[in-house]
Image 1 (cartoon, protein in one colour):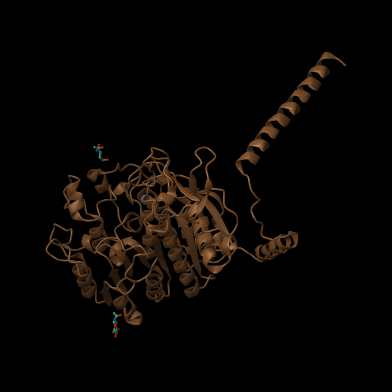
Image 2 (tube, protein in one colour):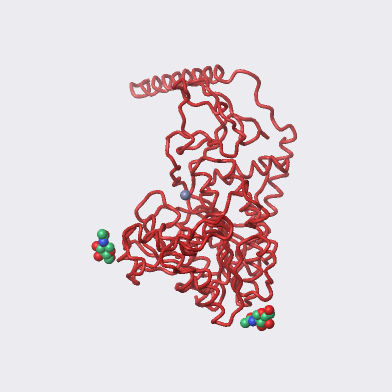
Length: 520
Ligand SMILES: *[C@@H]1O[C@H](CO)[C@@H](O)[C@H](O)[C@H]1NC(C)=O
Ligand SMILES: *[C@@H]1O[C@H](CO)[C@@H](O)[C@H](O)[C@H]1NC(C)=O
Ligand SMILES: [Zn+2]
């Protein structure tokens, strides 16, 4: 044996020996750490089960063919902050109610095409909802905090907001410019970042009314606020449907809220709800303003072409806390919106936002967040039932993630909100669901890590544990999902930049400023 071969042989033996030692140590550690029986397996899930299951999925996928035809309608579902982990947890939560557990499927998970969306903005690795809305509605990435303008507009720069060359138009406007209809539905204020992406051009997402513009030191007569843009500017002034919360941004200080009696926010004396109704009347079109569930459900859809519904002074309540006699569900709003928009034989664009998935995550209230995610899913199901996939694209995506984790520890068919076990470091309990950051961070009285069972974990306001304290949790920058059904859904596959989404939709619907199916 020559020297080289000898060295190789020695090295090989050493490496094997080393590997064996490490392996044994880690196995011993593993054993020490997880005493007790193995988790119970699902006995029916043998090889026949999995093979049959996979063959059925194969058949379904073999039957999928791309639909190469113009899309008449686009319904864009945006789950604010709906990370992939939120989707997984919501699915298991729903499965715990249906009995399907981990094998549950959300309505949009059966869509034939899906993709991953890269959501970073022009000035941040992790986007906010304003920059993100500009990307997925206007097709252009921009700075965090600004809406409907490009990278040239720094947040809070009123002068730059006025420069029309920096403005970008949304797919809602592209639809209207092509002679079709558009509308927005949300559970937040209708002037919040996501819906505003469909119509506003602002240097700051907080400028929902004139008082907010003035608060930041700018002249509200120079820089129009978001509510004003919705009512008086193209494309918002021509929306057929505007449903959500946010009455206070539309009415002046001396007008008290219809429901809770608080004064309006506006200092310019304008009642934008009245002005909206007056402008519709002067155009000779049928319009209706509603502010509660009964009035929404009583809307005469056949004779109403323009509908504004503002169901809360601010954001609408969480679904778990909503007064269901007063406030419509996201599903009810979506249904009425589609019924009105469907009257346009040329087609429509509708944005539907599940806006409070994000709000609940910010407080680490995972029970509330998953309930919002399931309300959002129910609205998708309603849209599916009211439309035809031969002429309607239904797209579901999120604007960014949240730092929700699903930790290992429980066996199958375990309540997703439960304790997952104990840490091998401090011996204290941990939950399956935790957050990377947010108000759920707590230190217990003894100075130890906080133990979740010290509080009422069944409370919907229980903040699940987080690793880093923040009064309101920071967003997560992980890619989010895109799920698509309908014509040209196959254009949305792979890993894509978020701002590509409306370009693909515009191609399919033959609208917009780029290449389209009708004008290739
Ligand atoms: C605001 O934007 C304008 C127009 O682009 C620019 O000239 C100005 O320097 C900006 N102001 C600040 C404070 O950045
Ligand atoms: C408005 O609705 C009425 C019925 O209430 C109908 O007769 C009329 O044609 C409608 N007008 C427009 C402009 O749609
Ligand atoms: Zn957020």
